[in-house]
Image: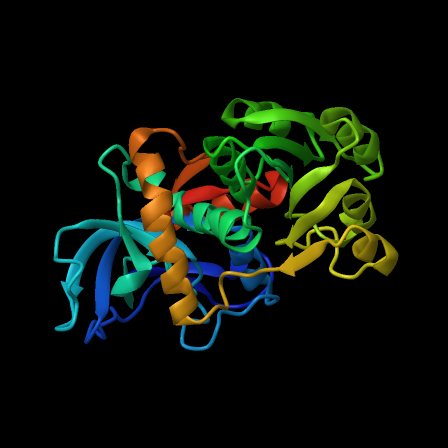
Length: 327
């Protein structure tokens, strides 16, 4: 089969589309999927650079965390799927190839209204956002949510999921155009943060009447920590998901204790098979129906052929947006 292969770490010249062995380990509860489209995420950039290796048991030289395709073959213990069904899901690595093998409980059926490319834009962003907001932060109807990097893939998914449950969603980004594009998905307000995250404090005070926000989904990292603690409401929850602004910051214990705040770190890729299965099950139950009804939808920036993977990486480097590869 053809697969995007990291032949050496560093620039995009280290990426090649090569012929590799087609996986044949679809035994027991495993399902082999013929991939029709796969996503390109920030994690793939980091893996190419040599900074974010795949978890043990997954291809180290074939990137890709999410895919959409059709069931090609199943193990003798598989009961949920049969050949020909359209499915999408997450994987620790290897999705940017013509075939992947995954456990049956880490797949979901693609709604009829989504084509291959649209479906490939869903799993990583929406499972990450749903798990962070609802499973971990326990978001409730009517609460106030602040999403940093609201124009990103996970950000736009979080905005839509929050709005679908009647939360009030506010967002930030470093550029106004990304926020303008994200606004139709459910943002009640936004602020552009360039070099000083403290501008967030006055904005949140105005939005919430001084109450603060109940949940912060931080896809940016250390640079925003102090401002986050300043705008968090009493008993608020802060979800740490990304580190693009750094991974180390000084923590004011006094603010955390006085607000009885919760700071929760999360990562999806390195979780156990059981944890990924649970996250996928909740995604199937709560998010797929919203996708099917059109209440939430994937956001796609660009689509590339598999052999254009270098161009896709270059675009993500320039714009920090997501892209999709057609396999």
